[in-house]
Amino acid sequence: MSDTEIILHHFDASPFAEKVRVALGIKGLDWRSVEIPMVMPKPDLTALTGGYRKTPVMQLGADVYCDTQRIARELEARFDGPALYPEGQQALCEVIAAWSDATLFVPGAGLSMGTNLDLPEPILADRFAFFDFLDRDTLPQRLPALYAQFRAGLQRIDDMLSDGRPFLLGEMVSWADAACYAPVWMCRGNIADADTLLEHMPSLAQWEQKLLALGHGRRSSLTADAALAISRQSQSRVRQEIAETALPHLEPGVSVEVSPEDYGAVPVAGRLLRLTQHEVVLARSDERAGDVVVHFPRLGCKVVAI
Ligand SMILES: N[C@@H](CCC(=O)N[C@@H](CS)C(=O)NCC(=O)O)C(=O)O
Image (cartoon, rainbow, N blue to C red; front, side, top):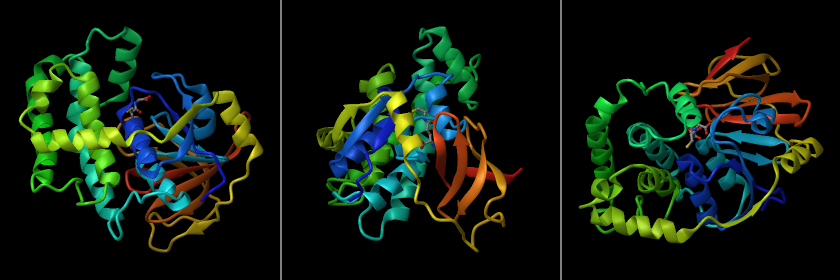
């Protein structure tokens, strides 16, 4: 068990944050909650990340974890409690999560926006710029197609559960469940006509109640200033490693930029500390956050020497 406090930088309405909150519930962990703004600018968050703006971000001392896949891996590696990945099934969990993030989240985000075009203009403007797969002018005409795609995706969850198994991989709840639950939760909270979208899926409905009952672990709030003070006063213990199998071939310490391969592709610059098949890690310094180490998943991130 780590003695480092888990700090989640997030906002309540975020489905990706809900995925991590459910994982914290599965593991039954204590954590600190820093509420971040829904839209840019997010100066306290980007002081830690170096520019990454997506939600959520997890902080453990001076280590900053971007992206839910990377966050889940670290929670599992560092903290006791029920496993997020059943024995030998971590990669399978990650593949199912990636399916949910693309196949379910993309139409789900389109419907969350397209059925809520009366949201305040600053939110609409921020999200239409961020989600480069959504076009504000054509979104209203695309809604029937998005409903169809989202519903067909939800049906796959119901299908996976239709043999009576309690969770997607069988008897044990896992990261795959948290990841597939997030778009269902988003649907209930944000999409008009959620009840119609989710009807005739009895296995999904029962599973959803089980996930809801798991809760979020024990949450207590923390200010962004206190989180920045913690990073300033902490020191990362992450060791340098450049794996031979990882691409591109780079030397430790070189200056690189890392950015998501999909939407919200703001580059983060730093000195390369680790590059493996599973993660890319940068060291960087910030006036307010101090010396921080920023972790990204290798899959889904672009790494370029600068
Ligand atoms: N691949 C990322 C995706 C995260 C993501 O897209 N989060 C949404 C919120 S649910 C977001 O960042 N929205 C814009 C924002 O919060 O500024 C992950 O798994 O963490």
